[in-house]
Length: 413
Image (cartoon, rainbow, N blue to C red; front, side, top):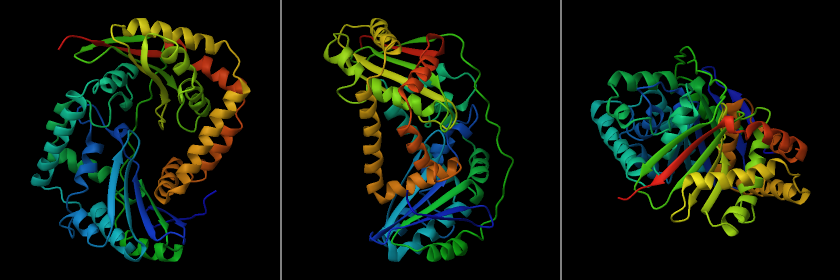
């Protein structure tokens, strides 16, 4: 387990300190508990839009990146359906600069018309390049919309429609900022060549004066149970047909989540996986295939995705996939295969722990779920799962009436 100390400021900001005096740098990771699941129809993509806005200016910082680079720091961020995460690496001696910069944009971000319109153009261009003009780029727009009826997971983080981004008003932007970018909705992790005493002093100096303008929690609609298979055909000028088949699965931290993760590892992880052997190496339909879970805070998706060989239809490929999975559901998991899957998970965890930034991100993420210790507890639970439990959950999740399928059909340009 990673050593850490944890405390809360009076305004609700959660602060975690992970000391590593063997490092020469410090990592400053600030996670906001806001993602696309906190948006509403017609105003989707705002969480991602704010990831861009936050790198503009604030009351005392004309250009965020420039101020950071002057002291040898670097920064980046990402948005997911569940969180928005900002991170800085900086020489430990200049740590206070990170506190100054992040506290200023949490409290008094510049959201004037010029800033908003500049970033609106940037995000619109990103939408066009990555999701409209890219082969298969819109697939998760289709798959999420098909899979979910009411939950905000039914749109990707970039936004449901381009027009949503075009139509953001100044009021929309300010309301989103005030609702989500506040101390009690954030987790700060500081790691590296730091001390808990130093971090607590700086946190109180720079963040504790920020008022907690807590607003009522947004109610996120629960997705009803799916009772029948959903299928959608999408036609586009893409190289070959593609297949995306998703099954509803338990939420992060819920019973069955870790079993679902192991199911996809057993079926589709690596070149020696069942799907790779049966459908790619020894088959004539799939050029490639993969399986994975989305890792969502609320009930998410277990997905099989693949590209077809030339001339093969996604419908034909789905039949072959179903046949392989059907045999898996009726079989016994070889002990060696299960141990290999668990060893792969352990290797990934070990690799993650090498990087200071990964340690900081994991502490922040699991703190937002309720407790930083969940990271290790989850790994321990996963290592103890029996194959009977995996097969039980496999048969609960992988059912036709629980599936949503995109047949991505190649058409002439």
